[in-house]
Length: 298
Length: 287
Image (cartoon, rainbow over all chains, first blue to last red; front, side, top):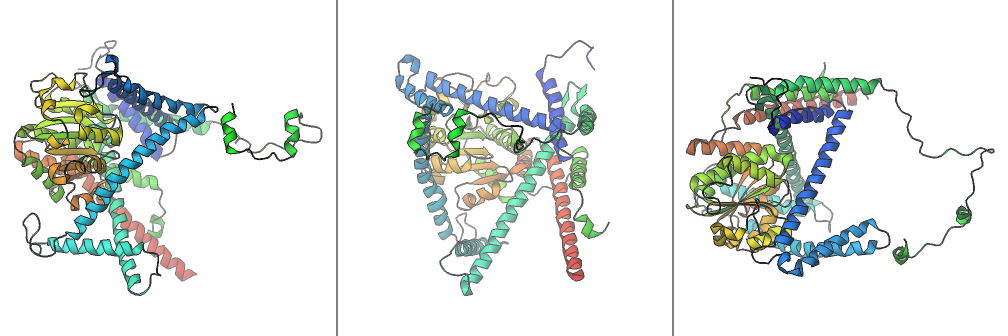
């Protein structure tokens, strides 16, 4: 039953559903043509996402620093070690000054150093050593680790092993540039290229699947969202579409603005530009300043 | 309209066709059969094999952009773990994953969550752990050093479950629901690799359909024990749970729509290529 006019439901989910319908239709209207509504929702999404992430990360960082953890006492209890990372992170704000810009590089260098050290160790183990181990221990005879016969059933696990081994070797030869890809090496690189193309095809198939999934998610939202049996989200679909059409027609009827000039027009003989004392020596090329001079700029 | 001209058709007609073909199964489900893939069944088998009281980490590392794919995966797995009597530590290494996890837990455990019996002993929701890869590594080494309070502001030391689960060495399964970085590769690098490998910290992962081809090498080597592939993986998992304990099979219409949408895309690719070949043949002949 529809509530009487003036009795505004306090439940936020109703307004979220209404907003969601309009935002979904406005964003999808981009597929027809870029229009002010699609741009507005796009900008709104970017702004909200940026502010939300900033606020959430700030809150989490403060909670870790001030509330500490079970292992580390709180900063409020005198554990001033937390001041160190806070000070280092505050140095990021020197990005906005010219005089102390160089201080911004220190937190960047610290983070880059930590991440490089962590990633090198982790990548070598998980993406290099473990992958080689997994390839050289592929079962070709006997039984698989799960106890199944390697050449039993269809497709047999042994066939998968052979395909993987051929794929690894031929793709590696494709990226081997010391010798020209001729003769047996040429055959191997050609097979490797087919494996790579199959990989790209699998990636493209996955992309199509993911995009269709996203469309399904939004369509299910539009078709199934309801509020207390009197409001269904799909009621608003025609209204949102009419809004898009009206805005598109309005934009079409507007006079087109002239594009901004890329270069200033040359002054006529009567229009002499006012000379500035500082511009006079510009005729002479200034000597290049050394990079260190940047620090003294202010 | 001749085939060569079809290859030059305005793409907006194709959008309308996709919209119509995907909508039909959603409004009138076709109830197509859903064969369960091997990597989905592995997620089910690995979880099912855990004894009651085992500890599972449920990590929400995705945002609203992939909620259609990752959310049903995570929800189904948490419901499965709850049904089996497993203990769960729920966490998010993405800021945007934290409210989604809160929403999912309220759906599985009821709107009163976390004010339920068993919160602190069977399940704890830590919330967002900052620091990306660094936060993940710290969490694996010492959970309570990574964050001191749960998502609702209670000190973690007050929970009996957190006295039992101190690091990744104390967990029996890591369920990673992800659509980017940090994700399954970072769990392998910074948690599994540091705590005894895949036998000590088995990982099951649910990814978007885009990212799953990148996960497959880790599945082949056993670093990931099972994978849910996008929305289809979620639907397959739901169908297994539906047989096991009548878990609602909510993604049925979605999988029908996906099958129909894929058939349409395949038809587009075939017709477009035929048109391309014919136009090339005719162009070559005329020249």
